[in-house]
Image: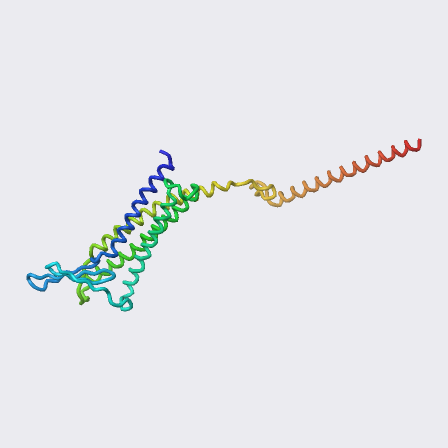
Length: 259
């Protein structure tokens, strides 16, 4: 199997993996269970509290649930704002990365030449990789916050546990990082190698050739000076011989005229 065919199949597989990771990260946005907690109030009634970055919800054992959006954005902590921003940036970068990789894939033949396709796919792979890193930081920080509050003995408020949304986000971020890194490595090597082959190395003139290691720079300069002197002397000799030839021809023509 040729190298180009292997790279093409690798592109297709990594593209599918990255798109799957992007879908998983997007699915965590409407997911309500990022954190959850169960509170037993009465023997027959159990309340479940769960929330995400956008709203808080409560449900009981009868199946009735009620959600309330966060009333003020400015009243939130900075960590919630950071997680929101990172996940939104991750989704946007993965969207543009999917478009770039789809255009630059070898099987689509949309980007143009092989070099252009490799560079476009490399840019898309970097978008996927950065997208996965942004979402991984957001989900990891949010999960670490929940775990630290749960195990903190001085924390007096209600304690929550990590919900399904964070685990789904971890899985999607891992797929984005893995697929984007493979695309960037393979297509980056191909793009750099193609660019170096496109511009061949031309031989330099003799004046710019490096001095050999066996000779010093002074000796090389002296040789150049002696060669120039020899060329000047030869040119002056040729000029003198040409002048003497012209004078002899003039004399012969003058004697013939006298005769």
